Length: 340
Image (cartoon, rainbow, N blue to C red):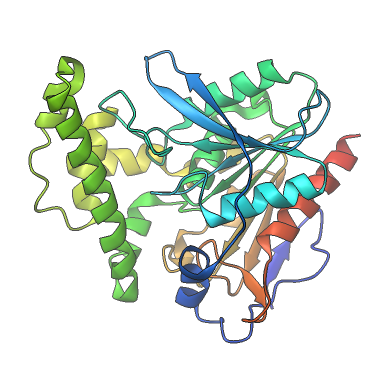
């Protein structure tokens, strides 16, 4: 049985789909096998103070008072990730609006600065929340973050305390301790995920190096060139030490992991927050999960025994259901009613 600590209990507990109790099958089902109809969305470009941009993909009603959900994807994902599209569709069915954020460089167009995004990029999230609040000052505003997006969201909530500008937040499959997660993903079958992520991230950096060189973008070219060929990067420790740290102002990988890990910020959260986590997450050690004493009183921590990483597929293989897309809207609706 899952261990729950909730103010708003789920309408129906999660049980993995028959045949999908394995954590890797749960993790891989969405990206490899889930099929969804295209979702009509409107793209908005938000220009940042450093001259770079973020793209938001909007869906749902545009009325001033309509509740709005900001959706944050995970590493190497985008607004097109199945869990993002699924949640936007679920929120629209309730009459809510949503805006799916693409982190820097994730919207299908390379970003304009040497830096990109990372697990601690809470300053970019703060800029988006400021923008949404100014755009729709009368709308109840919520945020939902998955994996890396969940880590950024929790870090932001801890940093901002009572000034988050959010009525509520949900974080799913969070890598609370980045150093320990970098170790976990290098073990066993999880090394398959590590190879995929490292390959995707190296490809992006190399394309950016070529683009800056080809277009003569002198500002930042030296920073990208200094990264070198990246041929020998195999692990997250390698990549974050050689790429993430120097491009984003960290001393090394350890410094990045320490400053960006959301576990260190949980006690300062003052926004009502639901965290959904699985004990069998192939990216996260069980000992990386926070202890109850580390959680602010406004955090509901829902720990499932199964579910993988951003999986939580229920029902059957013929008719799969997605727990996150019924649980998160249910919690958000309950939170909205409580605020009213």
